Length: 239
Image 1 (cartoon, rainbow, N blue to C red):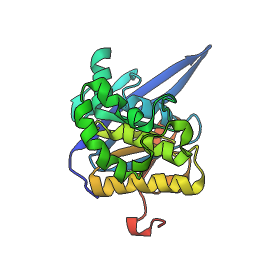
Image 2 (image 1 turned 135 degrees about the horizontal axis):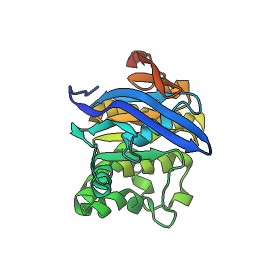
Image 3 (image 1 turned 45 degrees about the vertical axis):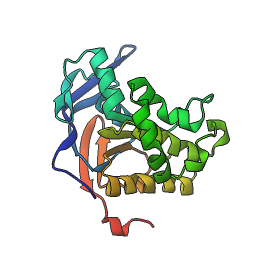
Image 4 (image 1 turned 120 degrees about the vertical axis):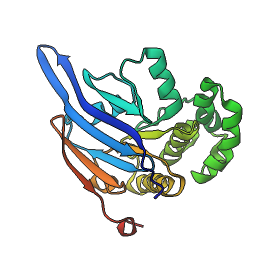
């Protein structure tokens, strides 16, 4: 594991509510969380526990009612929409259950799209070869999403998330649409990326077996963190 003593993401007293008709939903009620650079953290909880809301706030996709999110030591409170958009683009990689690839683009162009938007396409194209080799998709770069298996699409999505060398990767149920073996392959890639390349990963999952691939497991209930526990030693994980 390549872990530094520097927080990649930290949250302080996060509160988020939603109005649903006449009902007020307390999605998060004062959540504190710190994830270090080079750490793999999984977040679990029942439907409605607040785990997806927490991921959205950490990813700067939503703004908390109160509390703060810091990214690489930068307090994001009070930043305007343009500043938040740049931070999401440059410092955060997203991996979704549904892959969210553009069907008309081949894998190469899907991966490079965030870098092209950022204006760093040339540097990203130089990184792509090694990244594709790491994720075992070098021979699939000319294929469109419809020509790829579910596991290959998720690897392409992971490459897209990593192409701008983000500070943190946020993965929302990344194995949810995959069979058990393919899901395990994706989890192994995340684990190896953390251990060998120093990636920082925060993963929301409903699957206890998937959660155990992380260094730390956080459980949410009714918008609050109920437990935080270290997972089993890496040598004891399923091989």
